Length: 306
Length: 306
Image (tube, rainbow over all chains, first blue to last red; front, side, top):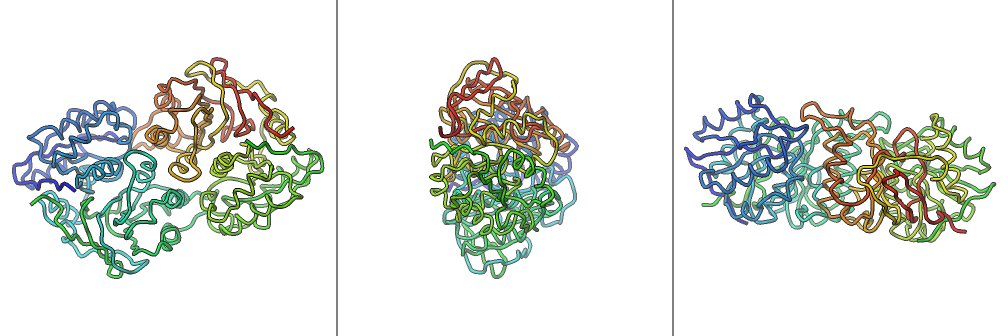
């Protein structure tokens, strides 16, 4: 894997909107946080565009990404928000150039789609908050973890975060994964999730309980999770609230435990990443160690280039 | 393809619940309709079971299906309702025996999962109303079409139904498809949708607009729709009402037109099947002719064995 270059004070961070639209006011707080850490922040030309649920045309969103990865003045790319739109961009992306750029690409949720593609091409990326995430107050360690990753530090060391053990044991492997519905949307495509021998991260938001079951079952039926070295589940945010009374409900932690608990690999729930109220930044494509008994995930190599 | 045997008066129809739970009272009206047509109706042992969003355990739901297909006294299997649950059943199903049974298997929505599997194994199946569908009043031609298929007639002849042309032209091929989210959940599995050279039917219910886009994009990114001979879109029921104000909306007909209109094959919208208020019964695995200019789909072979 190619590790991205860590940022130093004065470096330029480009903010892009590859998925759904966002307003300037939702970006301001995040920009101030990044500027407060000593970085210059610039916006992609189409970062504030909006067409329905997309931040402007596919061509525009893709050109902002291509330009940011090609611009030697840009040190890292941070997404404004998720929503939906990345999967539409593949015909327009210069992915091989991105993978060779050595730039840190940051975001989560819909950005899972691009993380999978870049990790497949050998570039370590950052599963991190986006500017919209930072527009509301979070625990101090959320920003601390994000800034640690940007600067090449260890973003998992900032807080002693414990997940709940379901299946104990120790697993080591590269970290992969992200938002469950995007992981499933990758199946059968050129950029499909490959979890073999890896530590698979899974989380999602606003999914009905039966859809969480359906998506985990899809991963099982496609033979994708069976080879994982370990599984780290975050939160299925607002899933228990989204149950459909016309078909009945099962609590999401029971669903996840029932679907994945029989695989015989270390499994934890409620690891703080993704759509949870407070998230650690997690480098994807970097080797880590999951101690499921202790409920901890720790890096066993640095996320950035020396 | 193996065509199922048509039913004659006195034949037994077995009602099973392979997905979400249903109450006896929701079955009564459908049972009366089938009995009124001269059939005997029996329930699978677990047809009224309920565990959360599932109609009882996987083993129980699967055993009802296996038993119905194996029982020489059962002439056809009609599902009570969809919801969710079929994809969980694969480890327990005797699919090869089902495919050789020559029995008509009927349902839609979550049953898409089993239709795809059975069609792949060579058995023609029926994309039809379920007992829950028949629990409320429908246009007379809904029942007429369903009963025509059960009896080996042409279920598309009952009413001159016209869809809206988007891309004109004529296409001929086997009919495949069903509910979009289940089509996507099949990708990368042993029972995946194969639309090459076929007339692909697509519809869904209660999906957010951006998810309709995401699922059609999944079919595109996985290279599954590009080889279809023609595409028949039903209704994305309640999709425009499910738009998420936090990310913005695009009307579903625009989404479908934009995603699929460029494939260069005949394409129609609003064909009455699936979750639309009134649905034609459509035999899957049977050769048909799509006249997109006329907005019509017609069979070019009989759905049942002579």
